[in-house]
Length: 283
Picture (cartoon, rainbow, N blue to C red):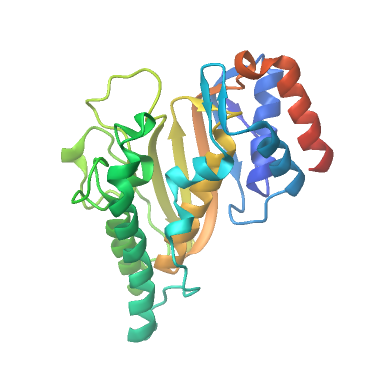
């Protein structure tokens, strides 16, 4: 049965409510919808500390652990972005616009430069999420930069006074369907037949409504302990970047996990319960 988690004011509370619900449902659930009302709101320090404590980098059995920041960086590599603090607007002067454009271009170029190194890691041998966004299909440079395309189209909407658009869902069939009129970001290719593993993130949709840009992401398998918090953080940062580059306000972030997994087999029921208690104590 599908579940709609009560919308949360920040990503920490959204993750916590989702994990609590899935644990109460027996450790697994299908079609779990999580909503962050303000993706750029400050995280809850106690919740973040609790998950950081659990995600000690290394391995837990057969499961490879990465820090929250590492997971977030697979979706938006913030460390490579030289944020100017500028926000796009119609009357932005030429010098400021050049600086804003250069900051985005610098991010794309820096990531493409390190992409060959990243793909030497076995976990990235089929590409990375951000790589697929800036150079589809994401294993090397020279591919389609979906983010740059979306920024161009959204700026055009702002320039022409369009603060609301009824946008289509993203096409997820394959490279040939990366059409100019599609506002989403393609992550999943039709040739991918794996039931689990990369890419768990299937697609990302963007919707412009009342002058705010909202995001919806679909995961076919959402690992709530090892990945979900970092995924929410990375998606929030990506949405913030797109809003900054296009001049629109930040709307909500919605994540649909077609299969949500509390990972009690990896962390044990007692371990997950202990994490929830630590996180909820300061939330």
